[in-house]
Amino acid sequence: MLGRIGVAAALALLKFLAILPYGITARFGDGLGWLLYQLPSRRKRIVHINLERCFPDWSTERVESVAQQHFRHVIRSYVERSVQWFGSAEKLKKLVVVDSEVDLSDPDMPPTLLLGAHFVGIEAGSVFINYALGRPCGALYQPMSNKMLDAVARTQRGRFGSEMASRADSARIVLRWLRDKKPVMLGADMDYGLRNSTFVPFFGIETCTLTAVGRLAKTGQAQVLPFIGEVLPNYRGYRLKVFRPWQNYPTGDDAVDARRMNAYLEEQIRLMPEQYYWVHKRFKTRPPGEAPFY
Image (cartoon, rainbow, N blue to C red; front, top):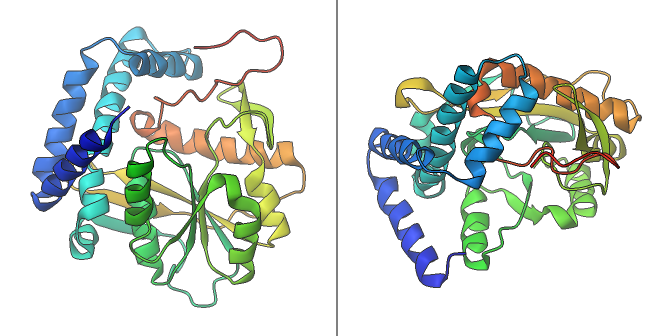
């Protein structure tokens, strides 16, 4: 746990890195990730378990290669909070390529849920999509345990007009935003326990999956626009990919709708498996009687 001095020092470092050329900051994060991967750690073990469970046909060598690439991406993503939180709008605009299948600036956009996925570029995508929309949106977030860092993160994530709300207070606030036709950003591909969740397959594994997206879309009569923040190769920045709205969604069946989200994730993860957030305990909650993974 970081104390106030530790948090202040970390924020000072991020602000310093934000003024450096992006390539230097990105390479520093990449190198730090490589160095930390050489050390035994709980997070490294989680990455290996997740990859081995989801890709049982992979060789040991491929698991090791993707695990190392992923660890480097994760540490780099923390370092790049510098430019994402403290870099100027002009700097971000030069770093983010927007690849959208819909017109984000459409003033007649219907009530919309912007569904983010936890790839390593989610922070860049979430910060910039609000800028690309050109108008305020709502965003749900999971509060950090350190209150000082949480306050800074909340402010910087909302610096382009996003109204932030804790995930714990979400339903009432989200429905109000949707009634006001304010686009709402949220992520639902994490394991938050059994409440408001169901078990559906994810890479063939029964996985505790939130049902909130389908329920909110149904109640708020909203379309669902998935988006992904992708880290581009050769330290070129990011691609914000926004897909077309899901058709025939929601169905009203929580399990069917949750499986739809997981199937979409599987498709995208296979395109860049090293960038999905494997350091998270995605399979922490198991069906009754099943042994833990971690």
